[in-house]
Image (cartoon, rainbow, N blue to C red):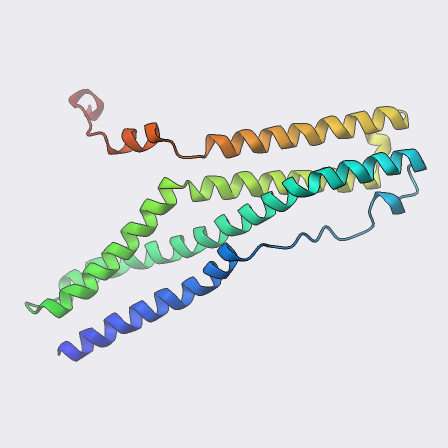
Length: 206
């Protein structure tokens, strides 16, 4: 009977590691930026001076845009992996608890599944994986929505070119500030860790 439990342990570990390999590739390899479509220098709506300003402004943003995209992809990949395996662990643990026998080998699989699931939950909460994914994805999405709207309909941003540029630049800066604040708000601190590990007082349990 022990050999079946060994097979179960081997299968679980192989699948868990195998599904983590694509996540690891995303975590280690930078994601390339692909804005796509015509840029400001091809737009018929702007003067040459405005095109130069917009092109230089976009060049200065490339660092932030690349960082947002990379962070969003990394947090997204880990979030999906963690979600899939914590749900799997939640289903397997009670089933295995009923199936294990007196031998030690059968308990190893239950222990491995429990540790794997608990570790993923702890990492997701500690690094605020879902919140960071949403923050970086929202910043990236909001910028490109604004970028496309400005390319297609600059008249919506003001009555003349100077006003349009000023409105566009200020809205981009607002997106940058909002994304930066969301990122800082989602960075775990020592106080957060201490608060989570602090035992509940009698008053807090009421």
